[in-house]
Image (tube, rainbow, N blue to C red; front, top):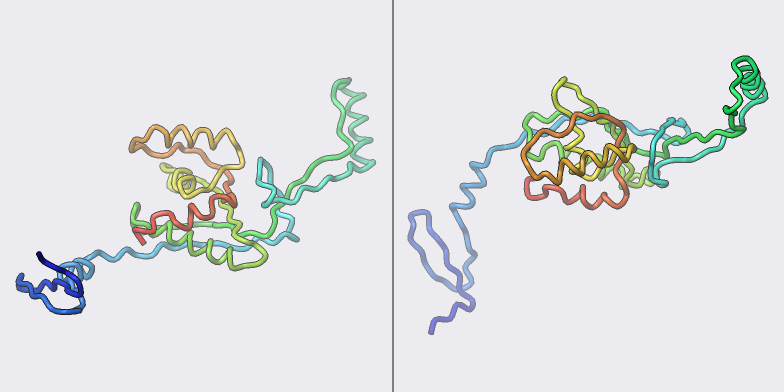
Length: 215
């Protein structure tokens, strides 16, 4: 019977092995593999902080955690102008509401641009995770992140990249398109759709843990 208690196997560089008591295990092959592992260049990311008092107006379906909803009373001048148009064009079925809804963003970080020297290497994800860390540490923003997904090279859309990380469009129909794309489970380019996206609170952990094995 062989007992392995308190013993470790040490592989030498020449290929031999020796057994000794409580000797730290050193894998030269693994160390060499790590040294030869190509270095992934960092992505460049630009972002800025949107402050609530700036009243950054938005539209679409947002999480309540992201927007301040405000009812605005229509001015007397607006109502009078509306009545004049109704009389002139006989717009009997149209009536301007006395109140309108405005939405503007709470304190958050907006990603303006991100450029990764290599695709599918995790550099872009790491850059966004760094911004998320900053937003989580900021008591004003509390992890809120927004981005406008747009086509910058005339060919590809970053919608798939951000969607996989946990961002969602404020237009639900676009999210349905992205879900159908993911369900296909094939290597195809993401749909070329653009629009405002935000990171729901429930997806913060998904972004934090995404591709940790690549970073």
